[in-house]
Figure 1 (cartoon, rainbow, N blue to C red):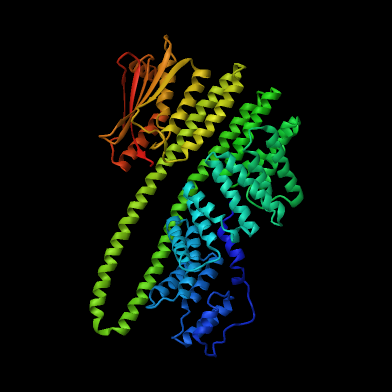
Figure 2: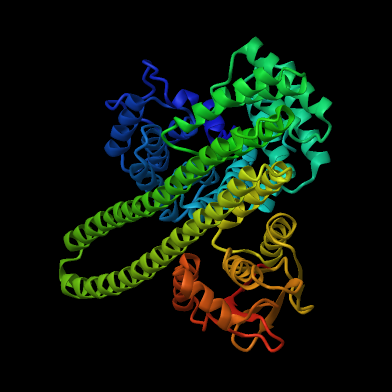
Length: 631
């Protein structure tokens, strides 16, 4: 239900820009006064009217109005998805005002929609920082000049912060917008904003406020003609309740809304409807119907060409419910097929995510090239004007221009080189992290197969715990950095799973009291492979009671974290002898080594790992990791 509120704004405010009004308000043959031009400065025009307006301005050089012309051209270009042209005309309008000796209030007022249009275009191009700056420029002008649609500027800023992960700033701007009564008088805008505020509160785990704003959104939908996405809102509200009766109640409300108003056109509406039905069937006792609904949903999700994060989350939720169903029906054999389907689906999602990141880099590069071309055209035009007007100074002007272009070209080349290197290293890191998950999942599936062959009663509890660990591991592996607290939580879940089901051992995790685990962020999934090795190669043949100790220390001098992993197993030497005899190559060890080499180059720190015999027997791993402070 991701509806960009900017489009709502132009649907309401700019609708008449797209309408072709046959009645012309300008006749190029007539002479107009500045007063008349000012009277229609903020008035909507059709494309033909804008072209006639241009001719009027060209016929009388004393008239001020070019900013209004550029504003309209930018809007028309945006509507046709010609984003480079939209930015070009917006910049022309802004530059025109800035070159005036005496800027009138009316001229500044006309700048507001120009800044908004440029900001929205930059947002579509994923240049979020520049988009926010232009929205803020528009917001600054509203402090000097009353502007009816100010709330839409706040929502535009909020959307940018949301896209780059600044959820706190996104929420703050949405809360400002929903205080505007003029804004709330538009049902579509109010419903969308309330829903987005609810989603953010949900992400912040403020369930009370999340429920409150979902209810506000539903109330407006019920009391107005705007019914789009009401089913999705009911579905989101249902997920906030731990009580199954409440969850079923709101899922039924969502299904009733689909029947009454038709299934929504937002992405995933059909799949959500199938999930709601399956869930209701299960908890009302129709287990076979529930299984069929969920199986059909899984098949539909598997056939998608492009898998989104929402598709992935829905697949995991569906599988989680199917796990409970199989447990109730005692159909153990279905588990293996289910887990294989899950693995294949998640691999497709990960590969698609990697390809999309590569495409984003290429798109951003092309956008930069277009912007550079536009700037070059502007520079060339300026040169021609200087040559015509100032023939005597042409030599000095060319020399200065060449120097400026040389400096600019060198700076641009250096910046692009650094950016390309960063993107390359970042993608290599993501690729290596994506290789860690299949390794981890492969080991987990082997454990499941073993339990199934033994017909162990611990199979179902193991799979339930594994499903929860999968979700946590997936969330961490998508990020370049995660908090130390989140990484330790995932590690603890893994150790609890292994110690309760696969091997019998104790474990202890300690963190130095000087380390703030929520503010300290580290690369994810680098510690787990060594813990796994300690279990599989250190403790598995140990006759004594097994134990693993994990301790985290801060090496401030080297700007590193030391993660010390110690086991009381058979020892490093014997462990290496066993691995040599079995002729097993450590895939995870190679991946960790490659990641550490990349991190060493990127952060200019001595990331490394040493493995040695522990003082009291067993094996000790010293892993030195880079860290940042997320303050």
